Amino acid sequence: MIIVIKHGADKAQVENLKGLLKSKNIEPHVSQGSLQTVIGCVGDVAQIDPGLIEALDVVESVQRIQEPYKAANRKFHPDDTVVCAGEAKIGGGHFGVIAGPCSVESEAQIVEVARAVKAAGADMLRGGAFKPRTSPYSFQGLGKLGLDFLLTAKKETGLPIVTELMDFKDIELFNDVDVIQIGARNMQNFNLLKEVGAYTDKPILLKRGMSATLQELLMSAEYVMASGNPNVILCERGIRTFETAMRNTLDLGVVPVLRRSTHLPIIVDPSHATGYSYLVDPVSVAAAAIGADGLIIEVHNDPQRAKCDGAQSQTPAMFAATMARIRKTRAALS
Ligand code: PEP
Ligand code: MN
Image (cartoon, rainbow, N blue to C red):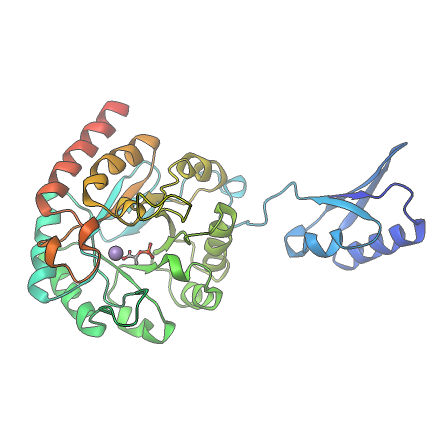
């Protein structure tokens, strides 16, 4: 962190600032120029709020030269993290596809979809049992019964299961779940992130909030990691912009941007990003081409009758065709 001091600043106040930094175990290195004085800070600056320093009378501006996230930072962990769930691997060259319905609706539905996505080459099965719905009158998910049906589908197919945890009070129901999803709406539910990070080292699929910056996403991953769980998968699922032609705006450029900043695997959700099933195939191919580590795709055996997100759900046949195109794309790029 570099602190630029205002021209003509009171010397005693600058000394006070140095004292404040030292009291936080930061070593201040002062460079006095003819026009400007700057203080270089050495030490654990992650604990300092730059806004507080900037608010001081003598301070012109504050620049961070190091990111506030450590555990997720590629600088301190140059090798890609590979997250494993059962036989499935995501990251470090392993491309993982998670597929399944938005929500678990019945045992027959989830087992049928699980078989179909497995046959098409999916690595994991998704399905929401606890659903974060915008309207309290919409289908809220089957809850514990939905988890039981997911476990049946896991037993039938061997696919690891991914499902969303909305409230930590339900965590014990998730003992046989392979990957815990934290949804976009909970990306900054810091208590949930801390609780889940301290409770388990199972993979956490962390979705980007719909108006979250990449730094905020990484700071949320940092909450899970700083609480003891290093197994975080980041998921780009589109953000909210002025555009209304699609459900969200897919920010695909984040894949190479995040790749530079973090060693964590990065996957893309083309279903929530676009909102329409016809867009899922081209966007999935683009995500694979730009270097994502995987995808999470909504697939329903009967999208028109889906209780949630039918318009964006692929049929099993569409999904199989997308998987074939992803394989070709990856082969062409390798
Ligand atoms: C979901 O995966 O079904 C979901 C609710 O996603 P998001 O949190 O990205 O909206
Ligand atoms: Mn959904």
